[in-house]
Length: 309
Image 1 (cartoon, rainbow, N blue to C red):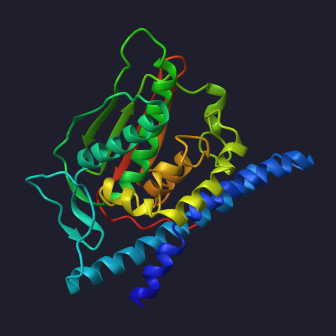
Image 2: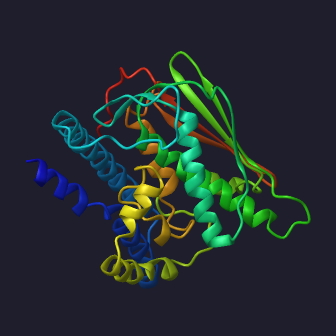
Image 3: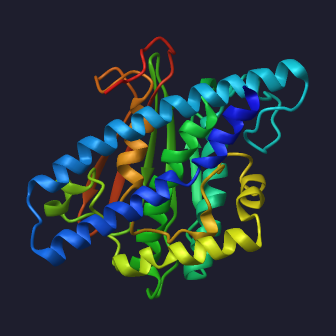
């Protein structure tokens, strides 16, 4: 059973990338044939929300089973933050009883800045302040993904706005606040903000603010396939980023363009507790011409039901 489940996890690691390209192909094909309708986006949104929510849940259960089995048999330890701490992680399967948002933010920042240097040759500093010592039970990778995506957007916007300026690049700032029910992370940048007219579309899978052509993104398919045959980059990057990036090849992804980061991040945060106000969530506030504040809310009580569409 364990071997079958492990095979299932690895076999479907690239599903998000493949479906992202499928959505782009669908969009381009409908436009080329002149059959695109306003309802296309809603249909795609509903289908992908349901599909990815189910995928998140299934992969969580499989990963938890395999991690508990490995721990009981002494075959291995759980991955997590690579940073040393006097308050070391304590795992029950993949659940870290002492998840540190500050440590996860720093690991996500390392991954994002590495990606930015590959694409731009420069990146702003990402500074963390606030309640950096707070810890609570959570799945590290389910926090890492939305942090990685939001920080990636902030870093990209900051670099593109200030790369030719005659002043130093402003920092991306992360503030952590812990309450009785939720932990909130505020990520602030000075990347110029998002157009107000674009705000209603930022949670859809067919929308992106990046000026990257679909054909360029779709062209990565052959490159990724060729690279997969010649080397195992996924394992190298998984080690580099402390086990968070399983199935997500940073080196082969453009820094933006698929339009998947925000809607998928919201699903990860809402998974523990559903779409009500008591669950995890993510919200964006944009000041066009200046920057964007992203608020990531994490339900830390562990007493909410998973969301099922």
